[in-house]
Image 1 (tube, helix red, strand yellow):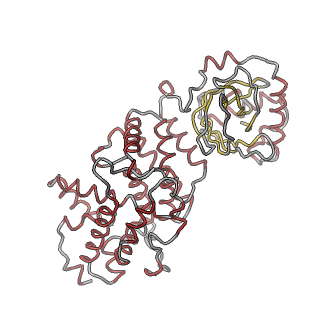
Image 2 (cartoon, each protein chain N blue to C red):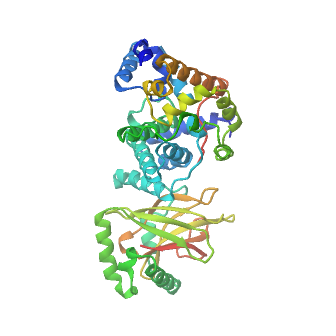
Image 3 (tube, helix red, strand yellow):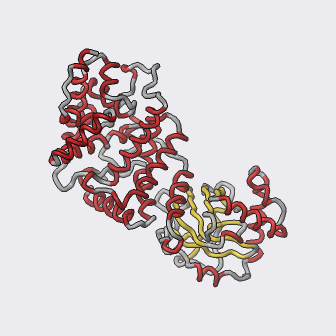
Length: 259
Length: 200
């Protein structure tokens, strides 16, 4: 159009469009060169960009799927050398050594056996991903072999459900391949009474193994890294425990899932 | 949290960025919890498809995580950086798909920035929303249109000029005026300005 042909190309006049990402490549380069030549203009541009970044707050709110958080964090942790991974939970997770010390048969063994059996029954109705888990705990070796295949194939995501009817907890756990770690994302957790914490357990056979403590956010959500021997676990569970955690689960189970 | 008591928030954002530079993954949890919602809402507004929007948000967060060590903090806060990456990647997608603006949406039908009350409900807990709303309301319709078509529609200034049948210089002027007005309206005393609080 005629008006555009006769428009001048003063780079300074392009700052607004530059801040709005509304310039073609050649004019972006023109502005970049201008900014390099006149550094004082960078501050002026920054104020325009600051105004631009107000615009996202004007759009209608929309919540991403909870799995997005898990996917991002799983990739973040996967980027790190396992030797330098920092604990992700807002409270100190149980160390792997401490977890291993917990791994012994206990008076709660039968309870966890029941949990694991219930999880297996639950898994039957959850579609194809549960196929390898059908049966009972006597198929443990087959399950482990399948899990190892899953882990070898990459990060595997598993759903986590409320343990009791009417419970609001739900989320997922992503198993990081070739590592004794997983990223848990969960929402709908009840608020905790004073002196209480949530504790994550990986269940291998009838043995629950502590995988870390956490306190949820105000909105009942939490996501972070949990440590544990994922390879040998058939299930994950989350219970309410006294602050500092327990050697074996003592409180109510609020969420669980098969691995 | 309001724009006036953001000093703590600014420090927190700076700490998050510092932690990202130090490769502390907990910083990414904090960053996502603070800005994941608004980042997704922005991407969804541009792309109109949840899967594509989530892909863009994931790419943007991982970009911040992986490029954090090389980020020049003089260019702005981590919020500005993140939302800019989200915006640019979303716009690049629609440009590459040659679907910059849906042809069945007339300019006059394009949603105004302040059109929906729900917009503001979403941030009522954390923003001094009336301040921003008022700022947006001060923009003349023609200025909001060019901002809308550029920022959310992905049109270039020349495409907007052609679409609206106005000179390119007018488009540039409207863009600049709109941003200046927003900046001035949202400006708070020196030392307290910057970071927006979480919206999602």
